[in-house]
Every structure is written in structure tokens, then in C-alpha cells.
Image (cartoon, rainbow, N blue to C red):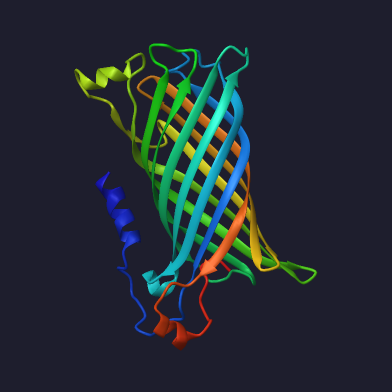
Length: 284
């Protein structure tokens, strides 16, 4: 585990060579998207049968910030993601509902490779993500809630493609993220949560990797300039499966996303006058 933390710290701090020259101001590309889609839940802590699945709808909000940083002579982008989701589902028999809510924060660094072809940017790197949430079942009386908390180190890759259609500029992006190591919280099957205040805490925090957890996020976006605004249209596919302490959980979602993008530069007024309107974008 220590080696994974050292790897992330190496990616997170400017240990590589840096240019001593003054650079063009680096802008921040920020977007906020709201999405609606389908939700699929299963948690054997709440429903002992692995065949019972709850399906329904999910609402998601995603805020993203990207900026070029000084690492590797300004060839690295920093990405921050704040993601909130809430879903409502019902079992196939229509006898019970499950509600779920999650919040996560992700910080990642991507190395920007030289253009492999005009208009195409390829980025690869790593990220750390902290998430927490719950699944609540309306039918259960003794154990109605299953709590979730995870910290992951992820591999991440992104491709950004700029092109035009009859002179109209568009930007297409695909990003994939998958955890390879981390830790997660889980009670034991059949153990009520009020027991956490008593007895042994052994086994509540587990190392997670491919042997007991598979999670992946696929993110497609298309940026469309409309008058003075840029609209970002997206599709977010999220998969989360765990098998820990004899409890199997999966949370699957597919959502259509839409929102706005803004590009801004943050520095003092004197430098603004000196530099004028030029800036270096992490995205465009």
C-alpha cells in the first residue's frame, strides 16, 4: 500500500524539470453538468438474495476543473471532479423501494502527449478518489441502511479531439478511469450498524483491488459553442461492484448529462494588463 501512496505523491508534486521562463497564463476550464438516467442497485446486506435487483432513475451533478500545471515543464494537467448522485429504485415485484445517495471527490494528474495527429490530444495519468454514501431499503426494519466509504487510487486516460463540421468548431472527449488499489469500509453480513459502538472493529476496513472490487467510469462529452456560451453534452456510465465481508454490492448507472463550460484566468490586475488576453487552455 505504501508503494501506491508514494506513486501518487510522485505524480502530485513538481519533482520533474521545470522551465524557468515566464509562461503564457494558464486558464481554468470549468464545467457543471446535470444528468438524468437509469439506476440499478443490488446489496446483499439489505436483500439476502443475489437475484433481487432494484431499478429506477438517478439524478447526477458533476463539476469539473482542468488546468495545466508546472509538472514536467508544463506538460501535465490537473483535473478535479466533484460528483453527487441520488437515485430511487423499486424491486421487480413492486413491494419495496431502495434509495441511494453518493458524493465523491477526485483529484488527478495527466501527462499530455504531443499531438499524435492534428486536433487530437491524448492524456494518461493517475488520480485519487474519496467517496461515501448509502443505500436505504424501505422494507427492512432491523438493517435498513448499507453505508459505503471508499478511497481509491485510479488509472486514468483521456482523449480530446477538436474538429469542425462545415466550419463549426466542436470538441469531443472520452475519459476512462479505473481503480487499481484502495481501502473501503464494510460491516459484516448480518451485523447491525449499532454494533459498531460495541465489540470488535476488526475487518471493517479492507484493502480493495481487482480481487474484491471492480469499478469503472466512462465519460463522453461534446462541447458545442452557442453564441457567447459553450454547452457541454455528455454521457456518463458508472460501474461499482464489490464482494467484501460476504456482502455483494453493485451500483450501475447510465446518464445523459448537459451543462455549461466556462474558461477563465485567475491572476492579479498588473499581470492581466501585461499579458493581455492570451492564455493557455488545458482543454481546447
